[in-house]
Length: 358
Ligand SMILES: *Cc1c(COP(=O)(O)O)cnc(C)c1O
Image (cartoon, rainbow, N blue to C red):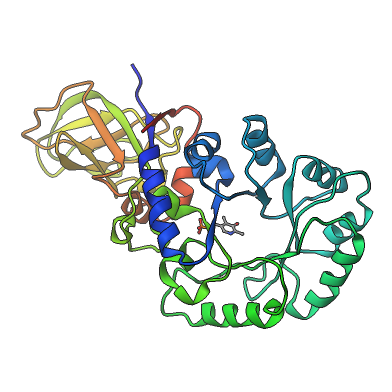
């Protein structure tokens, strides 16, 4: 019997792409499918979006997997290449690289051979993670041109640090600084992530990069994708594998962290932190069984979670349990587990069976 299963709805992905494409205004979309498309299956997502003009991943291995699968769409390596050999491979496979430090610039200058490469320059407008300082941009631009190793115009990227927070004016400052640093340059420009697309119309340049929202997930905590007309692409389900009567006053699970206040039925659900279900959801989250929400009680174990089915339970062993999806928004699970949905989708382990529909 298949228990823990992530069902990926490609219809939802295509719907979300349309919604985001519309929201992005005149911008084109860079579809971010790093981390195996946030756990949704990078090759499946890429194939579901033949109209996508660009994809983006974090590491060269992720891009090569897509190329091996026959995906010919341009792919941006969001953090660029980390050594000269990789840069040569990127050039050969028509991957677009990012330059955010001097080491990467030196590699571009050293690149020899027949292949040239598409280059994006990353500007640090306030995230202070990677990116060249705005005042260094001119120098980088002239050295990139002088290298003679680039294809087309230099593209420009920056990244928001607080775009999920509508009350922070920092985002507007980042947009302004981005514009001031490279606004007069001819190449394509991109600053918006999902939060930028959905919440900051001021962030529109030529390209917007959408990750989390493509999967139907809100970029802000305390919100849900449905508020933006997005559909959850992943439904995580599993099965009830045991049901037993439980007496009031008795504990359940490791550490006796929960004690029942009534006579009830406890259900055991085949999922645990060994599947990527967060242990921090112990005693806090809910699951959906036979038309209702039931509470996770006791500690999440490696392979099992206990739920309180209530004294009137008519549930049967083998019944399906929604862990997150339409009825239990992943944003709510993330909040009860004190984390963000990004982490939940990406931490699913390979024990979870993945199925694509639509
Ligand atoms: C992951 C990533 C994105 C996508 O961000 P979302 O919040 O998932 O939309 C955009 N840009 C860069 C540089 C990233 O690393």
